[in-house]
Amino acid sequence: MLLDLFRKEIGFENIHGYDDIKDIVKRALDAEDNYNLLFIGPPASAKTLFLLGIIEYKKGVYFDGSNTTNRILDVLEEKKPKIICIDELDKMPKQFQEKLLNFMESGHIKVDQMRKRYDFKIKEAKVFAACNEITRLSRPLQSRFRRLHLPRYTEEQFLEVSVKVLPKLKIAHVIGKAVWDQRGDIRDVISIGKLVRKNDGPEEVEQILATMIKYGEIKEH
Ligand SMILES: Nc1ncnc2c1ncn2[C@@H]1O[C@H](COP(=O)(O)OP(=O)(O)OP(=O)(O)O)[C@@H](O)[C@H]1O
Ligand SMILES: [Mg+2]
Image (cartoon, rainbow, N blue to C red; front, side, top):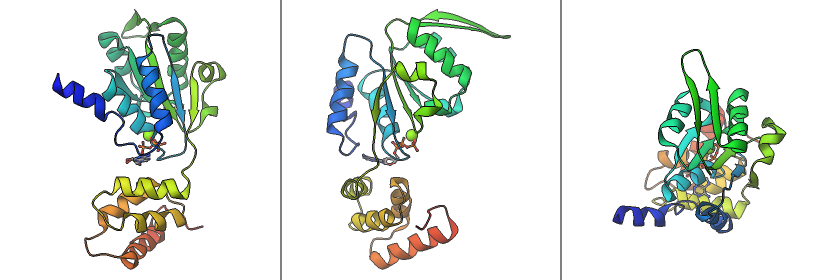
């Protein structure tokens, strides 16, 4: 019980900024009526954090659409969750996207397969999903959601998020700035932060970043 109360508090706490979106998401979760929200945004823009925050805030299930299997159907049938989070929705196979559309229209899941038949209803489920590319979803599926576009971070926001994700490092903002200048994302900030030692300064950060660029995927522009 105590844990539940505590959990409610921490749902979105590790997401820096976006107070306006947090408010909308909580309202959607608390609303009596059905509500479907889709987060659209570039990599490392906190979409997955939002979905994980949602299932912490209210009991629900989380699926990764890029790893879709019939397990999703099994879980839905067994748990009949009222909150369904689907990450990487644009990477979900088309036939699953179609099933989802039918489900969002009727609350009904009906799938006939060689091995197993699914035929069940979940009333009033709310669907929260995330994707990079909305154009990979069919128009009808797009229209089922209220869509929230998360823009790329500004430099100021990027530095703030860098400090948030590297709380133990005094030079977090230096790492953030170096990665920003190379147009990397927050994941690059985190991975460089792991390699930085206590006494390292801007020079060492530059050196690590230069090596990562030389052999890795951070592109120099
Ligand atoms: N606003 C933020 N506050 C705190 N951490 C953030 C924020 N934005 C990004 N991050 C950090 O960046 C990393 C990536 O975030 P997340 O997984 O939510 O990105 P995503 O939008 O789902 O990206 P993708 O499209 O690649 O799935 C996480 O480790 C997260 O902690
Ligand atoms: Mg993600």
